[in-house]
Image: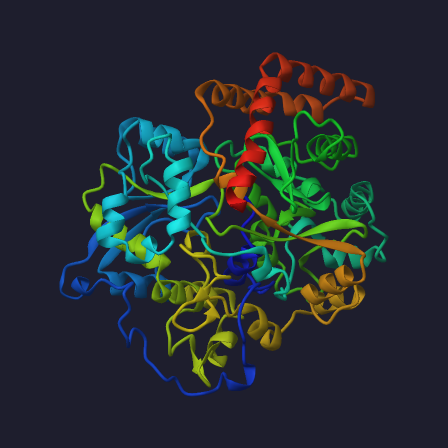
Length: 583
């Protein structure tokens, strides 16, 4: 569920000054002052439908992913306006909301284009709510059709056993080898906290999650309320059963232990090993439960963590009511609020002898989410044209780089960001108005992949931004403290010295798993529902002894519900899936 590579970086870049892109190609600061060699849209691409030039715009709705746009509806940034103009469409975006989507499915009135999550695949297909796409891809999706391997996997394993193409993989094409050596400007997933407050305490060593809690407690004691009198918490979380699931309650621990979320109730490591996190009593999930339990015992836990949604959680971050963060993509508002304070900003604490998440990739697409077209769409052909554009060289250039001649251009036959754009996007409002990388969650191809017309990766952020960004004081202070020239450099040097492990995951195995049988799905769904009720009892236990009792009761109940049967199924399927993707 973490955005591949530090996509958080790209989304944050639009909202805050904090950081920026992570993979990429040859940025050339010295050449960025060159005059544009081409104006926006000056050359046609197969990604752009020719017929759209002389027709009235087609109105489409697009159900967006689980990192929401600031505002729903039509977007006013330059990138989306340019896309609409090129394709002859007007797109109304609808932010992900699980309850609203269930109502849409029940009413059979769905948005034209759907960013679908794995838990809804089966219902969408078997409920005849989305269109089979084979014919549409053949007639309107030439760029999508190039991804033969990924489409074949989706027909075979992500089709509710129909053998048809109902769902389209997204962010296709990247391998671990592509990103292993790519420099990142920053790392934004794990244990985040305010640098100014940490500095104020004299940089006490943080070598474990327990140390982190102690530091948060010291910060809270010095800063118990916000400037406007709101209570400050050390730790907070949120409930989003669809899309994020239990993830917000275990991700920090999982990443620091070298794991990320996998299929169902599983975690995977960088070598594609996996384990059932509910059954593993000494693993990341139960370690996380202990972390939250301790936070509550110390008076650090936000009591609304089990009832608030993502928006409410992010509002608290923006209001500076929370001293820690899970990922930089959720800290954008907080960093924006701190922008005028030189030393202030949220950073990832690199605990020695722990892991730091870099990214995850898959040649056959991002696991757990896909594009679909609603059966009730009045313009499925135009919806397919829009989706195809997201997989085209022209479309990916627009989303990742902006408009050629305005935000980027070719210098010495290499694509580079223009200095004017690099300067402009340092302003938060200007970055939002431009919109480059704003739509990272709906890329058809991975931005690590190479534009076949250029031989260069779509993403230009890493090297060009590292060379040109005007780092904030807290970022340089952070980098110096950990031995680097900028935040990402500090982490990477720590990795070179063996102090931390940088983790790159391949999630292809999760795609090739396919859809579980109904009895396993019922067990897994029941377990998820139960865990939302049981988790607070464990975390809010009155004492250490009560915690152990509650934990044992929960685990016993999980086995009564069929955890062993589910585990046996997935333990058998995972090695088969890994074998498939290695063929």
